[in-house]
Length: 395
Image (tube, rainbow, N blue to C red):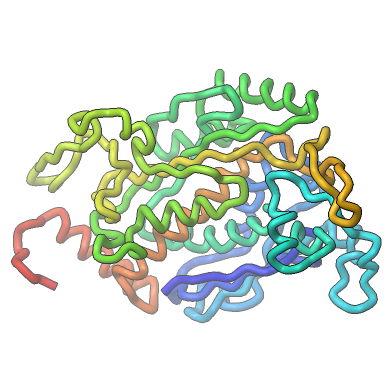
């Protein structure tokens, strides 16, 4: 079973993640993880924090000689900004807590609800962990899963399709072409013209002291039918993917395939007709389902889309109430982004890769990469020949 935990505060000394369940023999290096951590830091509209941080991971356990051991993998990402906050955020009683007190909750953040839940009067105790800075650790963990998928020739790639009022059609290109187009865009959008308009929209929002959200899409190629399950609600892969993507800070909506648009169409324009070719097996001519039917992958590319709200920390501030005085005020203004949709897309790639890898390990098992590969290849051949050799109740 694959699972991970993260810990760390935004301005604490570091973020850490412990990843359990990776098979032994999986090639994994800090340099590989660092490439994807760097992608999370990019994107036009990012704030001053990204000018400070240079996210690099230290692998503390579970890897030797560039390959996993089968034991838990421990990862650490140092916060460079810690040196500016070490007095305020120290773990011991020497911490200068009073110097960092925040009492003005920001609308749209966890500040007020979190303070009420944990009985904090200093909102810093909430915002330090609720911060999206935590997602750096999630990207590190999810990138371990991505590495496993790559060994099975499964590809994960994302693209931004909207920022603010600017919309771009999702690019229908090969995975390699998509990655090249996205990497060449300052906002992670494969449409060059829309990319320019998105940059202009971010500039306008910044000049007005405002922020922008948007929409992104993550696709996964190379998955066989049968990952996930329809037998229990919590084993349905679409539900697990939606929960993982929704857990990214700022995400307010998730859809698979046609998603919400399917509610306005007749069934004849929603469902994917089934075809068969002796050399290819079963396939679909369309992929409106986004690669999932009944909570199970159907062999077509997985398509997950999400909407991100605008960053709730605004330079001009929104109306709020001071916790200490109960006097009307504006929300506190920490250093923040104008737009983080490109970063959210990278984070979504990581959490989607994690859930897909979990489903792979659940179905194929194996303590080593070699075992998973062997079972994966055998299953792909079975799917290609199906229903030959199958009978009621076959295991």
